[in-house]
Image (cartoon, rainbow, N blue to C red):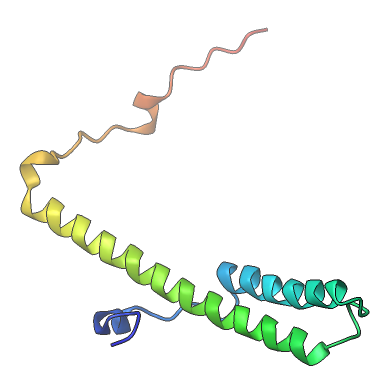
Length: 110
């Protein structure tokens, strides 16, 4: 089963480039740079393989975090819409107003 249940397979996958992937990929890369700086090595040139590895791990974790986040939001929306469908007396229909009824009349000041 894993972290995400089987009913999450019906949700479309998130894009490869997303907010969490960008943040965690950058955090992984900066972690490798910080480790180089702590060990008195040139931060950009030393351990490039480690920089790529940690950025890739961060990107992977960010992608799956976004996938789980989308599942949680979809589950919440599904439950909320089901509750509204089962209890229509708690959610009465509001009367429809036109935009002109909402906005106050405009009187130019000259």
